[in-house]
Length: 321
Image 1 (spheres, one colour):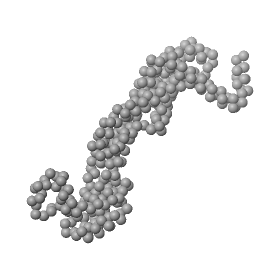
Image 2: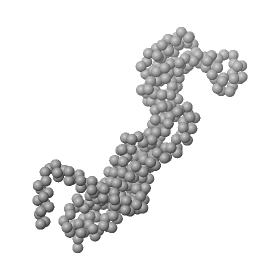
Image 3: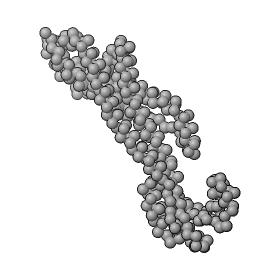
Image 4: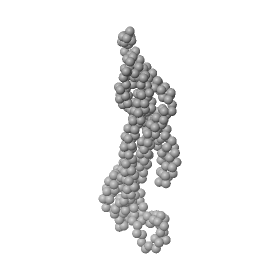
C-alpha cells in the first residue's frame, strides 16, 4: 500500500509532474497567506516593523536621488567670468569673443563692457552716490562664458577656465563653483550612508523574519512531528514557512513604498519653497514603478532568506519521539 502512491506518481508524464509541482506551490502559498489571515494582529505588527525598517534606506535613497537631480540642474548654472585687461580695445575684445565661441566646450558667451559693469555695480552694491564721485571707471570689461553640459561639472569647468586664461586678452578668470563641490561631497556622503544603513537594516529584517518563523515553527511543533511520522519530506514541511516569509517581505515592501509616498507628499511643499529661493522649479521625486518592483523583490528575497535560515536550523531539531 505504501508503494502505490509512488507507482501512480511514476506513471505521470513529465508535463503532469510539472503541472503538479506548480499546483503544490500555489497551494502552499495560499495556505501560508491563510495562516497570516488567521493571526492578523501579530502578522500586521511584523509587517509594520518590516515596512518601517525598509522605508528608512528607501527614504534616504529618495533623498539622494533628489539631491542628485538638484545638483545636475545647478551644474548648468556654472559660469566663468573672464576679466579683460584695461588696455584692450573693443575690437580686440570682439576678436576674443569670436575665438571663444568656437570652443567646443562653450555653450554661450556674453560681453559686459566697462560702462555696463559700473551701472550694474551701482544698482546692486548700494554705493551709487559714492561711485558717481569717481573720476574714472575702475571696473574692467567682463566676458561671461557658459560651459556646455559636459563641462558644467566642477572638474570640467576648471579645465575650461585654465584654457581660457591662456588667451592674451584675459587678465584672470573666476569660477564660483566651490559651493557646488561641497554639495556634491554631501551627496557622496549620503550615498555611503544609504549603503551602510541599508546593510544594517537588511540584517535587521532577516533577523525579525527569522525569529517570527521560529515562533511559528514552535507553535506547530506537534503538527510537524506528525508530518514527519507519516513520511513527509523536509522540503514539503518547510515550504509553507518559506512562503510565509516571502509574504512578509512583499507586504512589508509595499508598506515601505506607501510610507515613502506619504513622506514625499508631506515634504514636497517645503522643498518647493526652499528651491524657489534658489530659482529652481524642480519637483520632489519619489520611487518609480521600477524602483518599487526592485524594493518588493528585495523584501521578498529577505523574507525568504530569513525563513530559510530559521527553518533549516529549527526543523532539523524537531524529531518525532
